[in-house]
Image (tube, rainbow, N blue to C red; front, side, top):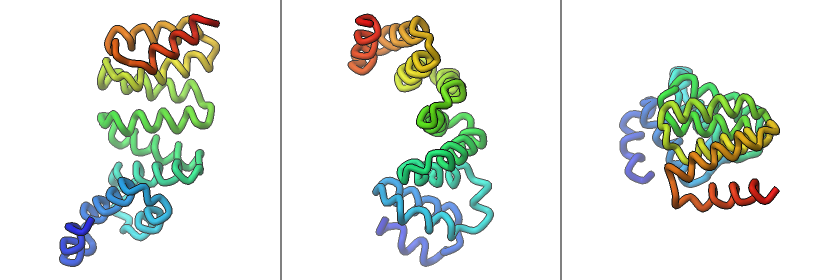
Length: 163
């Protein structure tokens, strides 16, 4: 962050630099400081998916679940090829119990990377929440085929098999 200070001093209205500074705050988990930083950005920042993503993360970490979902989904729509944005939009939907909606994001993530362990595991959670235990098992088995080292998938599948 210290390396950004001289750059920001030379170009205080550079939206890319200001978003990079906001990203640093997110990396430091300074969620309360991030919000005013984002609010102070010029309107042109609203055209950037990073703005909505960082704002959504801030909402999520401050337990403002609906605004988090709205902003994270907006970022994912603006940058549908950024898997992290898509995954975090799915998490925001799941936090609200919007399982069908979260499933759309997990499937989009799998279209981007068919081996995405996180998407496979989360998709199993969505299937289970929708009372499709066989679909949940199928997703976990698929995950273990692609990621045999996945302890998370292994434990979840064992729990499902035990019930």
